[in-house]
Length: 187
Image 1 (cartoon, helix red, strand yellow):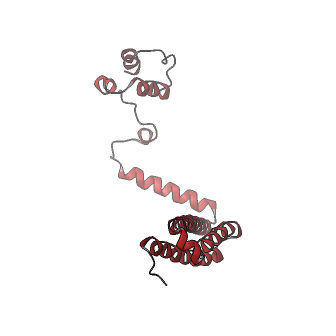
Image 2 (image 1 turned 135 degrees about the vertical axis):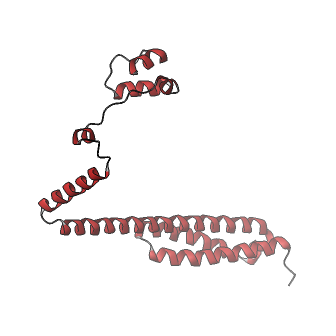
Image 3 (image 1 turned 180 degrees about the horizontal axis):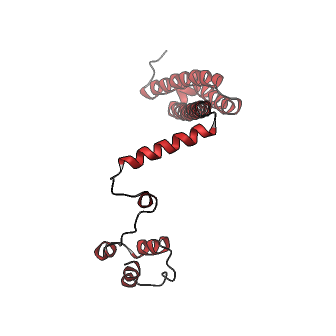
């Protein structure tokens, strides 16, 4: 028997890679749900076909055999990676949901009586108010005084930003004003 050529050796290596990818794909498909596993199994079949080529075909067209095996391997590996990523994301999402549900149950058990929760919130707001400067009255905490924007600060903003501020401030008729007029309106 003659020694295989370089292109035949490459084709044989690609066929071996396709066979290994098919084996890996079968293992992954066993662990997946029905629909993704079906797609993986179809690609496994393609990879098996690409890795099982006759000697005659390998001798005649080794580059075509190698190309087919590489394509099948690539398709299978990409599909298995995507399927594994989806499963991992789904598992992480479920773990987050379980953790949040457990936290909610714990909070519900801690504050079984709604009055406890209200009392806790009042105590927290009192401690937060105590941390503020003593010169502030309770009215100042609830309704802080509005400070006018300096004119130079407003001039640094764009017309769209000025219009947005005018709308937030409850002004009307600002949509057709120029930048200078908007600055006057907001000052």
